[in-house]
Length: 239
Image 1 (cartoon, rainbow, N blue to C red):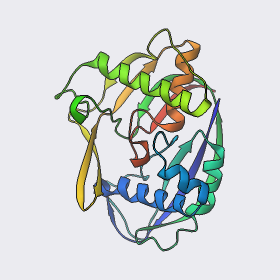
Image 2 (tube, rainbow, N blue to C red; image 1 turned 120 degrees about the vertical axis):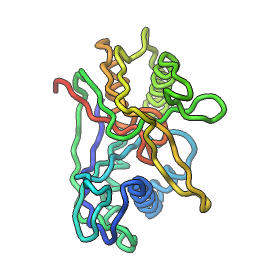
Image 3 (cartoon, rainbow, N blue to C red; image 1 turned 180 degrees about the horizontal axis):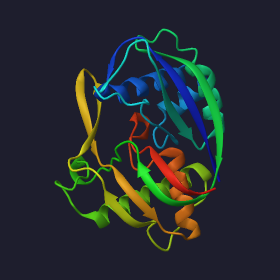
């Protein structure tokens, strides 16, 4: 297994508040995908997109990314063709009012043993009645772990075209790092929508299937709404 990473350098044309940054990046990526016929079909299709992205870096103390400055962000995918096409199209999107991609750098990451996971962006999980899982609204950790696991099995089967069945949940230990739910905000049809999620530290199990699933999560995101910035992970382990 392997995933592909695109490190992007963005020049900001305007100040971007932190709470608007995920929507800004998501729209930039979506518009860039629309410039390529195959990427447009992927973007418009229903189901898993098999890519994820992290936020702008470095994070400003004032929670506002500054006009005239350069920041980096990372896009990951299981699909090398998607990353290669995006590398070209991102730099063609020159008329965006908020930012301009001035450089991209591709990296191939081969599967490694993952000892810990940290969520860099909120991990979003939808439960009954369309609500998002939070400790306050739900609090059932076992349900949360099951949904995270089942979602990864479905992503694996969708991308690789073969089922994967674990004998146990891939999570050995899950620690919630936030005191209050974390949000990703977007606008749709002139209405503001907030996805509620959580920041986790996860110790995965060591068996083969668990390690495949956790590596998959690094490559395409954990949980839902990865195309809006949800579930972008950092991994610690042995290469």
